[in-house]
Length: 203
Length: 317
Image 1 (spheres, chains in turn brown, cyan):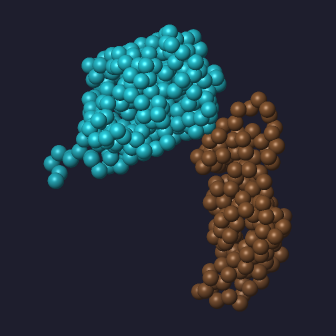
Image 2 (cartoon, one colour):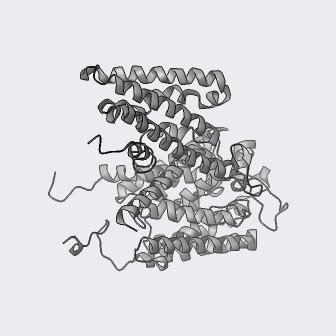
Image 3 (cartoon, chains in turn brown, purple):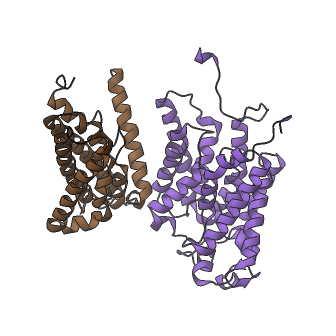
């Protein structure tokens, strides 16, 4: 079974088919909270990709040593170490973004995507497929939050990456408030499910 | 096999009343207040009314077309939503505000939940709150009606009361002005006399019942009178009822069939909850007016109210 799937498939499934946000609907806490600007989303996306890939690698490599009964605490220790590394790195090199992300940076520990991939993939697969799975899922997550953040930042402030795009546009402030996140996410989930269904139906 | 059963939404009661008859009656009862609004605030208000209604009808028609549903834009419900959206807007907003509002009301609040009869929240009020949070600059700028001393931007009586704590006479208004609608405010909420006339017709035709308006007004007026910010039992009841959107909200939006409880007891509780929340928002929050928020919050409780106040089935304990 494992051999039938190519590495490309493991990588690409996270981008669209099993996109963690639009189809698996995991990791919504950062998705809703930090997508107020593209800058935040980029920072969060990179942090999640890093943690996801490395935690997948480590969990996949210790999968035969860890007793089944205590696997969850072990996984959490692994994930938390990488999150701490990311947090310290970000505070060291990108303090502004780290400050903006605030509590949501350490909260990557409990981001369901990472635990979900550890439980759902890395603990049953070898290291190389786990790397590609982590990369794909992380990239899928990042692209999704970048899309949401782009829509919200543009509609809510008229800017992209902090630069004004259209002078005459009257920003719709609700989109950088929490309800705007839910509206955007809801519409996008509906849209992508429609596209996926359309593909499955063959038109 | 499934196709042979007609699955329709409750309540399953047959009557000569039809959706379109009720909706168009409510629409006609509201028209008077709109005419007064246009008279006070000028032709721009008329433009806004048309834009809102046309957008509502177009949105409803397009969504029903693409979802391959029966197109029911002539049943009056979309037109009524559009009219109520624009009645909740200040008279000088740019013309695209009612377009966004009507689109949001129909597409997100009504059709996204499955269309008429299935929406949880009142579409027009949700649109108003959406616009208020989206463009507070436009949504909180009011103008005085034509013919008054200053025809420039001015605050609504409720805002003045909230921020400066001055009485009606210090605002240069009388109860009679409030009653006729000669005050700054939203297009459709100012002309109390015509709203009350429309409400009386609806009550007479039994399209709405007295339960929600009665308990809403009783609780709001009672609390405002008792716990005024100038001291106990000093509140101005007539001012509290005629200075904001209470009359429009109470008779035409809180009583919306879809988003209000089914039973009489439920309706009384719903109205009382709205009254309490309106009082709390007006008195303690940053907003001068709380009718739209309170009706929306109580809308969320309607399924719960219906569930716990189910009428006893005959013969059961």
